[in-house]
Image (cartoon, rainbow, N blue to C red; front, side, top):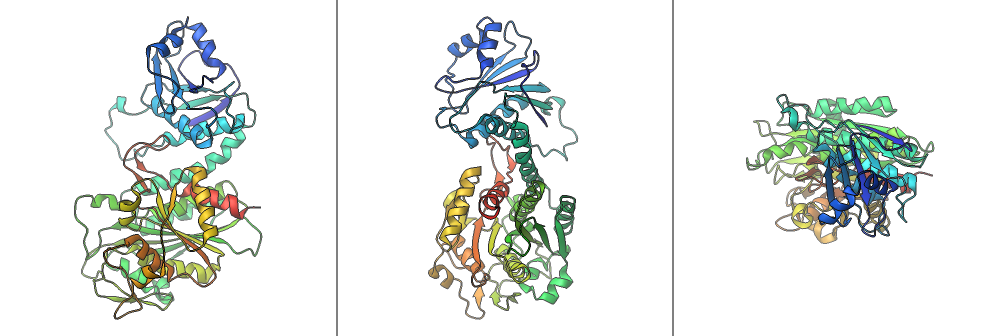
Length: 496
């Protein structure tokens, strides 16, 4: 999708999008087009229920007196409340309507539109990036799609008097490259995206200046990563550990470490999942996908911070060599783990990935992301990711970052009681904690692999990595959740 910015007059053909506030605020194009169409727009508004409410659309097809195919009015809500995420949603709603039509080119009229909370350049850039985010489509495997079902929209021209909007958009677009990368990774089927091929995708980030290191099973065995390797031992595909380094900050400054669960397919292992819905387990690598996308975003915009992304990549399969319930494994930390359920595998992958990251890079902050538990969806549905941390300052920083970009978080409890629930009779711990508080006991398990003095947060994104229905800036499918959250956290707290 090509996005351009111009102060030139609106095109005489194609579709034109006009935002309208509930209090009557609108760009100058509204009156100009209404006059040119002999009042057709005003009559259409009067005949409809359109009042400018947020997200509402009035699509005026082939208006009399104009050569344009459509004039699309998009409700923007109350102008006094209109902020960055509202502008993105407006752009996304506009793009969604445009994609359903047959126009190859469209314009969004913003000249003369004002909002108290947004400067003109920020308003235009946010509308534009929201539109682009909505145009994402994963269609590489569709070979017989009906011509009329495939969108034809190729270009959106944003009309604005701002001369800085293009530059502001360019930085958002680099971040969006990371979002789209994550959506692609999460959408790929498991026969295409598996540990080795995922690692190769990470290596492609070297063109952005990211240094990539890949560890195979032999190297991990020497390091004593029995926890991670135990998960993948039932698969014919070799497990991998990938480290991505972006050192854009001061030399010698301790980095921020982002660690992601990368189970490229999760059958549950010997503790086999039910068949219905198992196909969704291709996106059980959503945490690793988010970390990879975040590293692409940070490198793409040349973030002035030292950030390390580490992902543990495995397949959890139930063959004759698979890990069994009742097995005991030894982690890289030296701690032993009794496996009571082989479907509680993500925490086993993260245990060694977290320890190795701390031993190798000595980070000041560690944030892990994982599609870890179904219990978090029971608690928070698909509205929030669960945040677990004992660091109040880090919790506030992450919560603020999530609110700023729309990647919502909800802090969940993590107490000594949850840690006691994972005590084992024969090992240092067991990998599940019983019937209740499944998300908190999983977080408590991970907490045992965080070293003294390291600030740490665990984000359970099981309900957020995949959209089951369309949203204003994200079509159904892989969401890219976490990329913008991590980028904003780094920007706000670790860049000078």
